[in-house]
Length: 90
Image (cartoon, rainbow, N blue to C red):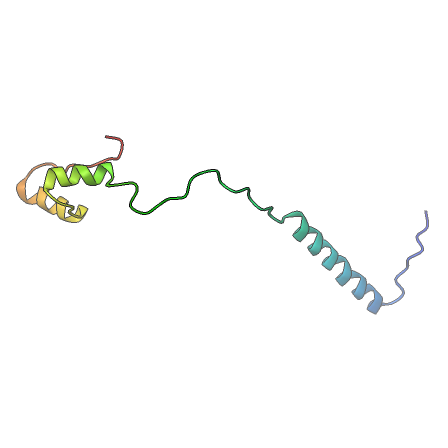
């Protein structure tokens, strides 16, 4: 089957190449776009509604206050006691 479109010179060939690449880029852009997400059904977080975590409560009970991990490690090293790791699932 014969095509009617013929490129006669380098200028027209360059224009056709640029246009075809632009069309390809546009098609890729449209095919990869992200759709909007549906609104979440969860209730919004209100500050101060959760209370202290399990870990914070355990640290307060053990040391009498919130102490950073590095200080707790140093204290365990000084006293010779094993370092206590606190997990949220305890």
